[in-house]
Image (cartoon, rainbow, N blue to C red; front, side, top):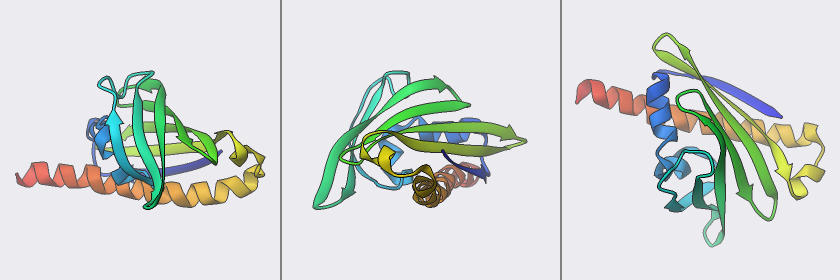
Length: 150
């Protein structure tokens, strides 16, 4: 399982607000290119995001489902990206004063990607999630800065 952590200059509630807005998913998740639909009860357990992955014109329509949720603390997702398979993604938020440590744990859960040795899966997942956390931080921190100046 690939694990990445980043400290974000925003409270857990402020970071959670970004995660809880399913329409923002392609802004912070590397590989997601557009949203097609967000279930009304997102991010409750069982809710799905209907998104596309890839780059036009090579887009694949797929979905991500919430497996477990503890608002402001934990979001566990089953992220599909066929034909490569699906991943289990765990996002943990931990308060550090007025900031938040965000950790993403990800690994292949099913499909052809599971055939790749773990040590080889972890390298691209780690690179991808460094950028995913960078994007999440940009969104959450800019919202905080905007709230202070607005």
